[in-house]
Image 1 (cartoon, one colour):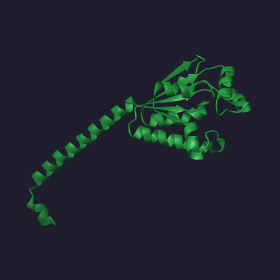
Image 2: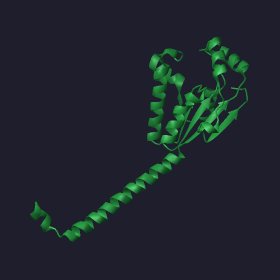
Image 3: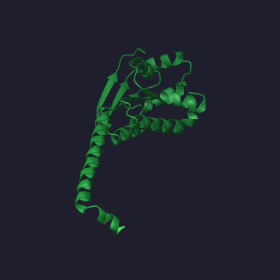
Image 4: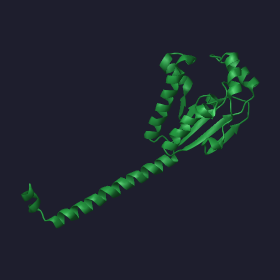
Length: 189
């Protein structure tokens, strides 16, 4: 083995390592800079509001890429109203969010009620981990309007559940970790 090393002048070996090593480092650095640039353009939008406040309608109108807890619940349990699988629903939602960020999707909207800071915190943590902007859109729609819309839905949330959710609802704030909070007060779907 020593003979093999002696066959090549050390000076050339060092020069080649220096050149190729620097090239590899520069290439890795350029890839890292491109990745950071892509990630800085990505954003997570967390929708916050009671059932019937217009979240899904707003998302459909914007045409943004969204992850809906109701749709995931339907995929997992064949019933969008099945609340017994919530833990798995939100594990799946967070998994899909991470996958979208890893492949560089520019925007992902989280379509769920997200009533409390504790329910919103996992999305903020994921966004920070991936270095993207995190925004909240708060649907500040009166409970009576939400109840009326709920009654007209194919899959209505029980009245008692609506009341509990309204008591639990806390408006999102920038100090939770959002870069911006947009408030929608117009009570039309």
